[in-house]
Picture: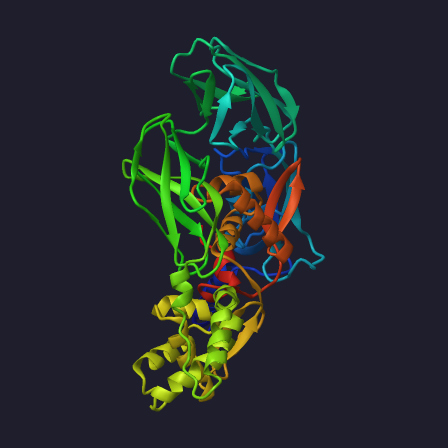
Length: 573
């Protein structure tokens, strides 16, 4: 009998042993599980210059003290400015008494001030127990310190300076682009005839104005120097080339590579002839003419001839502006071509008289009976105001004046008209589209567009809403709420730029958007966006930094219609 029980006992023992092995191989959760967290170093340094990533990699080891498999939840606490962040693995799986190493990535924003520090604490909890667990928890911490770096940048606010004496001084603005307090200045590589004032102590982001003296009376034609920004003992890698161009007893300075085109009102202007003086500086320009950058709809500019200009050439160009029904100011500028590149000049306002032919061409309805003459006088007298007025006034005026005439000669069902069907579909696809945007898209005149919009509204297929001087159209039953602000294309460009680079300085915005836009125009739009609540300005070490602000959902762009703000403030970088 004993011999018969032995195999059975052995089998039971083997099964028990196998079960124990399986149990021990399963990961343990909760009570009884413990691990040891270790960070090898107490202090880590992070580089935050534009050439660096602003990331520090911290090696963390975790060792299990349990004889069974274990799973740990990894938790981090970063005592730092809100712009910092840390990435760690969520869980770590360990075998019996096993040790593993993982990496914590701490991200610090580029440009963070030198000496700023943060404390990182890493803890390991048994899986599933949560941070409220009162059992044994292992943690370790370290300090992250921002390293200083020196850097300076020469800020160029002007493309050129004109008519300077052969001996004198000009000023250069240098910005401390580093993250620590340091002296900034410029070097001129020891060139004869150039002297600079000493460096100025600045805070990060602060600017200093450096005087540059020159004595170049011996320059016969053209002379160029390169100056470099200095921060402490570090000289900037890129220099600014300044070109001195002599014209008799006057000196012109170029801070950017030319050619440039400068326009001025012509002297002894004949009121009947529109003329502009042009000056070419720093190269050659072909096919120089004039163009209009801002004016009423329908206004056109034409030059009878094009000029070719070389360096220091001065000439006068006549041009003609037509298509105006009223006296007004328009903004013009010169342009020319340097190879394939179009070069534009500064902008100037000019006053233009009304074009009699344009005013006389306004349609006058034929009214039966003795009131015809009176109606004609009223409509002709209202012409100038009509073309300069808002969309709201235009639409109301045309509806009263022209729709009866269209209705008299049109007898068809709504949407039978091919154009009207296209118009209705476009409004459905673009709710909030403006009268101006519809006119530009379909390339029709005011009267035709007004008639078909009126017919669609009369049949209750569309509706409209007024916003200031603009009229927005919707398919019936559709409404877009939250559209209370009107912005321009330039406003949109600024919003997208600030959205891509939060904290960008106003000087950087001016530099990025220059080209065909004047500094004064960009500054005006920045102030308007701040007043409308789109942009928030924060002062940082004497420098204006821009951020997106406000909670507007939608805005109106007159030539496009309603635009979602998130389309502009969620720009992919």
